[in-house]
Length: 439
Image (tube, rainbow, N blue to C red; front, side, top):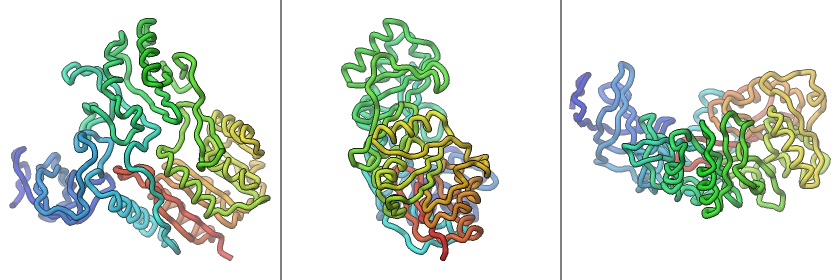
């Protein structure tokens, strides 16, 4: 079928899909033009309708699958396709991981110009109910049945109408409508823009409020919290305004599945997937192989997710983090578990080459930077001459860029790399790389 430039809205086209893009959309080339098709998988012949037409590319949604991929599965959530929280539920889990691994390896080759000596087996965990941290929108929309709680629609800014969420901890994910009904009963129903969930042995829910609740509102919130074993916090302003609604229980978790415990606050960053995180820590220690007495430098240390297990191996840890609150809680976590170590505050995006902690020679290093990577600190890290560096990444592009720097400029070799399936059913790629100093 020949495509017209501005076809009628209901016009249906057909194409064979050859690839997936970074948003999980099928990629087809139609009349020499790239078309991104939501809901289509590589190898499939699909029918589709256009959503957007531009000079450079088209965007579309699949309306029928004429020749399905052998990797196609039935999505596990009734809201898939409407909710924008997941984009790969129609792809078998093993194929999702293979897609992420290929994306990581391709980025390393194309951006960094490096090839790993070995590719590790993926680190896997549960595919459902795995999110112990989530930020969800809240909005009173009378035309859609009241207060909505959840993620935005796939192709719009509006909140999706969700009965439940299959990837969020079930203690909250199964109660979205009940929480919406609770908020609708409050006098401030139109003054709650979002909630944040932190799930450990119990569930903490931070309610962002533009207007403080009345006494009657507070009574309703407390009754709901007691019924469902929640702890509610209110956040009327910035992160520093967070206050518990009533007496709350401490939040903690084990970073590696042992008796070690890390305390955290509801707004603190912790890894989303508890089981994958513990396996990630185990793999990091296996690759780093710290021994008693080794001097280990850890950058972007956060609360001490890696720091505490490294210290438990008998190594001398210097942990560096940019946020003062995390530094204080990280040091407290070390001491509470009976270990010593240095926990220091420093801006790792504007590092001071004369800092005392950079004058030490380290045997090993571990870094866990944000999506922007670790470009600014890499020359100073390499100057420590650590014999092994474990790099935990949440973005394949910046990992590839930094890997190229370590290998091509600073004399390291990329000994091993592997994906961490921290976010099943999404295109988010987490990975771990091991760099060894060349002899």
